[in-house]
Amino acid sequence: MTGNPNDAREALRRLADALAEDTLNAPDEEVLQDAAEIYGDTDKLAADMLRLFEQTASEQGKARLAAARAAIAAIRRHPSGQARLDPSEMRRRLQQAVAADPETARKLTVAARKGEGLSDEDVYGMLEDFEELGVIPSSDAQDSDK
Amino acid sequence: MPVAGPADPVRAPSEIAAAIRALTPAQWARLRKVAAHYALGRTMEAKDLLQEAFRRALDGERRCPVVVDVVRFLAEAIRSISDGELKRAKRGPVLVPLSAPGDPATQVPEPADPAPNAEKLREAAEEDAEEDDRRQSQRQQIIGLFDDDPVAQVIVEGLLEGTRGEDLRALTDLDPIAYQSKRRLIRRRIERFLQG
Image (tube, rainbow over all chains, first blue to last red; front, top):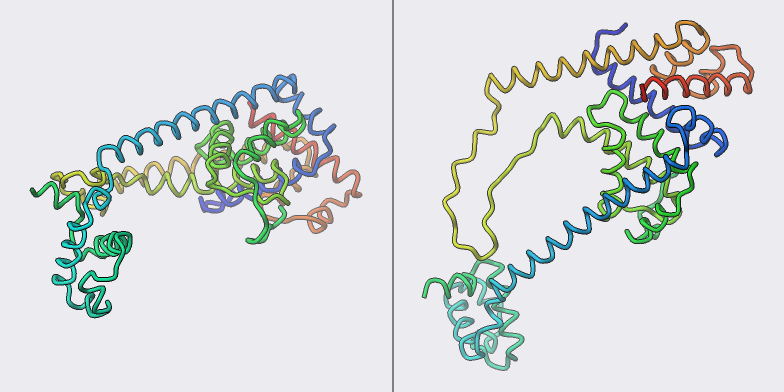
């Protein structure tokens, strides 16, 4: 008997691999016959296993539903900040962002720096980018400061 | 087990669920037996391994290529879970308090020093030693199941050492049919022991 515990763990793993491969390759008739000896009625075994699967699926479905409800509730509590702003307020914030970070601002066109020729969607997108980059605080944070 | 390429189309979780619901009694029996095999030397029981494999298949954590049989896919998931279970058990979960997005920053307690203290190290070492003893004992029990059958014992010891295929059969002097019959006897005896 070897004294190395890793040997025992690896040895049992090798044995499990061999048994599993034999079981996966064995003909149905043999598998059913052997299973009947160990577990009894194989139809009942199949029914029990299916029940275990359905139980797992049901628990997972409930967990997914709960997560979806929580996500919706979170969105209701914290709706997207930029979407609530009116266009002039968005443009004011963009100007602030450009002023606050000249390094980033240099990468924008002159028109973009002034907010000219940009659609509301463009401004909204740029503000989101600035928020993600941490150049400006999120609208939620700004609102809560007021 | 067959190896699928990364570009192979995969089954959606709903398709996996449908395939599982359509399994025959022989396929269910295979899965049950494979789960029992991979519970060998592990702290997770066969049913827990099965349930975790179902969960991972359903939530898409494990992807099942359409070219791979669902029973083999689940068997591989069970194998992987039994592997990871040991590693996770040793690491233990790291819980970090998180505030909801947009919530004002809350006072977060100073996280515990991740370096284990002497007491924890001692406890972990004791647990490891117990687990190791249990595995050593299980290995010896399995070999002992074949004290009345020296040929079967040679095969079992060979499997534990990692000898496979023709090399293993050659050790026994059995013809292929007798060898397969002996392998089946070994499987049945070990499965009865595991069910015990």
